[in-house]
Length: 186
Image: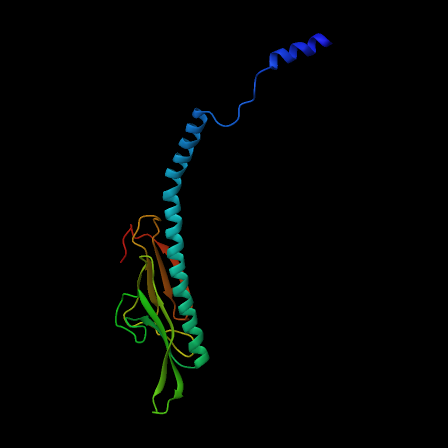
């Protein structure tokens, strides 16, 4: 038994275990990371664009829902419309800035209705928003005068469905559909 033990000591003497990576292992790791980055960055850009489009769509839907509920609460018409100054409606189909504006059924000291801006919103990050030039008017019952369509768009080909169409129905409700603009906006 002693001979076996001595033999093992002689064979293992002077050798140390290696620590770290070899140069080839390091090069393979860097190559794999580079390939994953090349594949992942465009997918990440597409995901960010989808999030930007969805956020702008959600902001517009929130404004529409606010306008409808305010019209019912106030018992008066409330309008969602394009605006240049954040105070008045503009007769424009470019809705990159929009307001929710309402009238109270209470006369001011001068005898005229009080008009106030309930919400002032703008698009960011290259998002474009198109809507009816006359705005969308909600009656005191929460219904609209007619069906209207708004288009939220980001001029990009990533994702392919770069548009969201928000249709405001006569009932005052809405529906949203994805659309492909081929990288372009209306």
